[in-house]
Image (cartoon, rainbow, N blue to C red; front, side, top):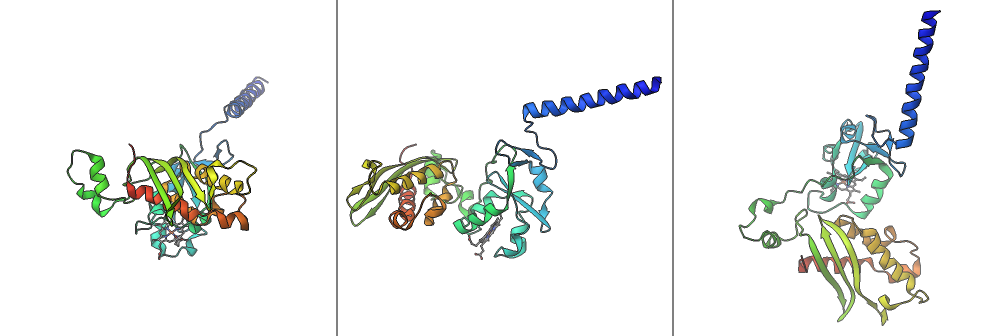
Length: 277
Ligand code: HEM
């Protein structure tokens, strides 16, 4: 009888502890991921640790972290256009720098970026770590000058070597400025991009009101700045296919919106160098 009672009390105590843990968990929304990465963030996405990712470090199960997002690329692997080893070397790792520089200083194309999305399985706990800087041949030969900004400027704009600051650039065609824009770079990311001038065929887009026929095009130009906010600067190349960046592209607006003009103005800004620090 007594032992039954003890067993019963023990059972009740066990159930209460389990229930308390469940309730506390529910109330706190427990953001701590388990070893298997089963925690979810507010968007319902799985949250993984680098340790979880590190277990998938071979061709049979290949996960990579790019810009704070975790991808299971096992099924994509046979389609990658390089020798397998180039791709598998980064399995189980933080691979943003390899993604942003294919080895020739160039990032992957928007087409590749579009594929990547199909393999997204979650995000990294704590967001994106700073990508490892890409080594450049010049980085070992920084000129000895009192001002680091001048030294880095003289090295040009190699990946991982851009100067933070405010930039201004223009796209000019047949003597007329069509696009003039301003943006800041902070840690290689685009911030606060805005148009200072947007003009095409006698239309001053920045003065248009919402009843204007071309107003949807102005909205799309504005969406470009909204969607590039906080993105790595290579994201600008997505604009070669603006339909991947802005909404409601149709034959009419698509023909008028020219992502290439924005890319050109952006690069003009980079080529001119920092406008203000
Ligand atoms: C993170 C490690 C990766 C490395 C080191 C890497 C490396 C490379 C290299 C060296 C090339 C150039 C091949 C050539 O021109 O012959 C390339 C091209 C390409 N890669 Fe990757 N890659 C990586 C990840 C990925 C991922 C995750 C995807 C897509 C899910 C991808 C998709 C592509 C595509 C579509 C191309 C063709 C060129 C382009 O569209 O940019 N790669 N990659």
